[in-house]
Picture (tube, rainbow over the protein chains, first blue to last red):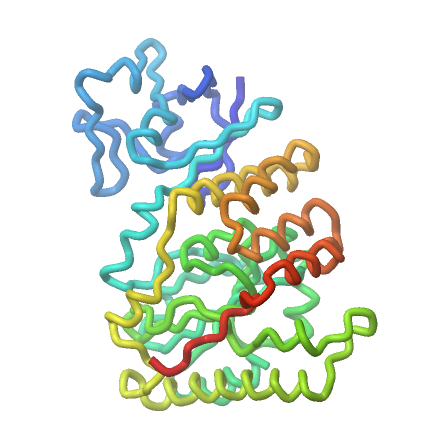
Length: 140
Length: 221
C-alpha cells in the first residue's frame, strides 16, 4: 500500500510503506529520497550524522526480506513528533524541539530554500555579504 | 512600503526579502506581489516552513540577519501595532485619525531603526549583541513541534481537497501553538475563505484582553 510521507520540510513522497499501528515500515531503498536518511553499518545516517540503532532493539527498527526500516521508531528515538491519518494514509514527521533549538548558541540564520513567483529558488546563504531584512507577510 | 525602503538602503549593502506564509501558494500571494512591483525577492512559503524555523507567529514580523548570516534581531513585530484594536471601525474598516497617527509613529520608528542598522551595522543601537539576541530567540517546545507536524498534515490534506479530514489536524495546530496567529488565521482560511478576518477572528482578538496582538518590537536593547 502507498503511504504519503511528509518528512519535515521535504516534498511529499509516496512510498510503498506498510503502516502497522504506530509503526511505519519504509522500504530501505526508498528511505534516502523520502527522508534524507540512509542505512549504513553504523546506523541511520543523514549527511555526517549517524544514529546508531540500539543493539537490543534491532527488531523494532529493521526487517529483512524485504529490507524495511521503521521510520516511526527512529522518530521516537529522536524525540520527533509523528502524526498520521489513516483514511488517506498520510504520515507527517516533524523536527524535534531540541533540534529546532540547536541553532540558538550560534545565532546562525536557519537555512531554507523557497521559490519566488518565477520559480527561482532563494536561500538565505545566497545573500551573505549583505544585511538582510527578512519580512514575513500573508494574504489572509 | 518595503519597496521604497529596499531602494533607499540597497546601495548600503541591504536587501529586503519578503516571505509570504500562504498555503494557497502563488495563486493567493501573486496579486499582492505584482501590485508592489518589487525589485527585492518575494518568496512563497506554502508550508510555513520558515515560520517554524524563525519562530514567526504573526504577520508582519521581521528578522534581521547580518552579512555573516548571524541573526541580529530575532522575529518581532515589524512596523505595526495594536492601533487597529482601539481605533478601527470594524464595519467601515476605517481607522480614526488617532489610530492612523499611532500606526505612523510605530512604522516610522521601526523604519528608522532599519535605516540606522543599514548605515552603522554592529555599531547601531538596534543591532543586538549576541547575548541579547539569544535571549530573545523563541524557545521551541514539544507542543510547538507537534503543532508544526500537525499543521503540515492538515495543510497537505486540505491541498488535496480533503477538507473534512484536514480539520482535526488544523485545529490541533491551533490548540498546540495558541500563540501563533499565523496558524490560527491560515487554518481558518483553509477551512473557509474569509474566516481569517471574520467575527471569529475579532472574538479571538477581543479575548486577548490586555495582552497584545502585536507585541511591540523592543527597539532599544
